[in-house]
Image 1 (cartoon, rainbow, N blue to C red):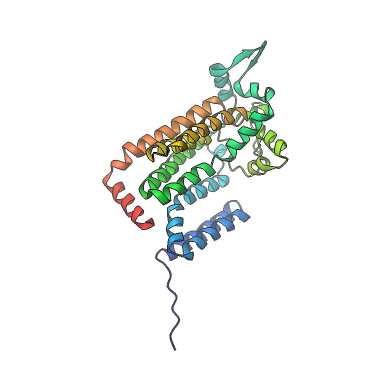
Image 2: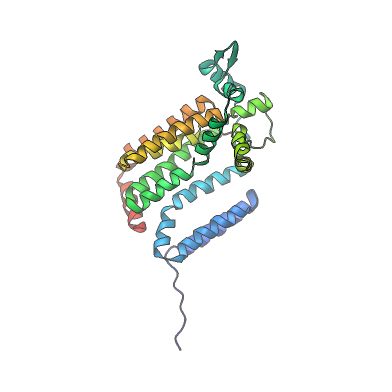
Length: 308
């Protein structure tokens, strides 16, 4: 009688340790939620289902790291480390971009709060819904067409986020909707708000953004706007990948996200500019510095071989 043997793929023990460690950590830090179980289940399912799915999930583990880091921020609010910039940021925005219209002085956010219309509400919501799906879809395309460019894009995306996360903790900042709702007084127990995106929910009669922003892990993270950084990364690598017509779409995506960030009251114009600079800094450092390091070249080559 043949002895039954079970062969586990390389890395199985590491995945098991990471899965248990993450779930244990989150149970203590912020409490386990259904999405934690779903994420870990999907990762393990892809890893053990077969060779092709295992390569796919190993590649996209870069985005899993991003998601886990973002989730951990919920347990360590940035306002515990530095004072939140509320009035200073608002006043700077007003000095730089404030204007008079029909006898009333406005900041861009204040203007859109009282001057909005259904088409802009709908388009802003549509663009903002795709802040993550578009980068992930583009990453999926690169994964199946150009493994090394996929890794460049994914690691640049992660690196830009790390820069943004550091700034969140160095300089916590309240978004425009917070000032509109609470003024310049710091409210420790502030919940996330869909702000102007609630008008999109009203148009489609679904609580889309309302449900998303109640799970926001960090309300005081207006600077920089990473929503506005992501499409810059996508367009840069879209041009590198010679994506043709899709680059026109990516350019439209950039304009839509930038406009929606201010129109919806989620970001100041300053936040948008700093988000763009964050993306440019991350892309430049990765492309001109990291990619020229021998150790990093070896790392990329091994990673590309692992997922090919």
